[in-house]
Length: 460
Image (tube, rainbow, N blue to C red; front, side):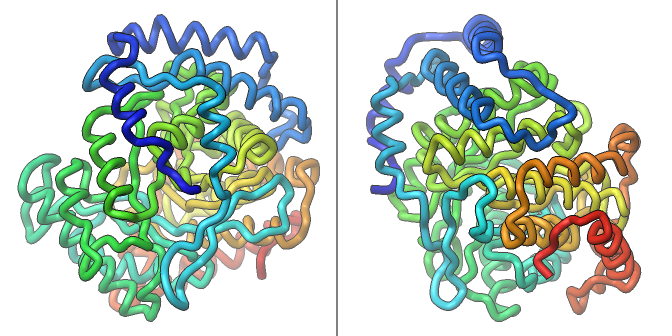
């Protein structure tokens, strides 16, 4: 069996669950219970072990997350109702989750699967710029990502304008933008000779109506592609998100859950962020009804997840999932630095290594704090995925990875508050040819040699 788990049950509970105002959910339901489970299971960040090797700690994190989610559930902000499940229902859904899917089609299809800690299985690598771009750069930027050999799937950049007109959520131009996005993305995949590659869409479409408009097997989102049902921080959804979930399943495409707990918000520190992160994976299965998850904890101020405390949480969440669930999750890197800087390549390497040795697949990567238009290239994703695939192939252990990650993080940790912005795509790439410029190619080789000298594993 694959998701969904009883769609009508989820929709009914969004209408009939216990009434709760949003502020009460955050301050009177989530925060007190989160503090309770952190103390009960003695979850504690240790800066000496960014990649923990304590299996009991991973199991305790899972128990804390399960207890949290059973008590808190998911708030539907449209109805002010809490969607709650009992443990037997969660176990039923977990037991029937297959743990592997073939996505994409034809010669370009790839298997996406659940991974274990220190797993020799190659991670599924999804390349994504995770930023907005100018309309005229959409196709060449997409082609640059799509032609990368390690890319098993690709998510396109996001449009802010279509035909020179601003895209606003819920307005007719959002629908036009979403359709243009889907059409141009398909065109880019065909132009690089990978027409069947798994495409994640459609980031330009924020509303349910625009997402539905892009569902078309001829020119738009196919059944072999992926669609996202996001969450509202923390542990919340609304009718628009549930509308997407219902449509995506009835249309027949693969569904991903988009989940990003914020360190420094209601989660508190790294411990709370990790517990909520694991709980999000239960919500992703039960409410978002996902076949796979995109997981990106991030710092509420600096918009990154590459410092020690966040890498520790990423590692621990994936170890907990690897040991206690069959779920498929892709670890989404968020770097503070921008393209064509040594720092962003260090951040990418650290994120890829931590994630894969802990049991994750890869989604790489948001850079320059994930907020600057046109400021991302495939080179950052390539670095993370080369290291991640190398980690799987080399059989590196968590303890070895921990020593390497600490050395890598020491190269950039002090720069996080004032991380270099780097350069824009069109400064790093020959836009017409969709190939990297010499400057970035040489920098990449220099940093790769340096990391190899440290002992960091690479795929090739």
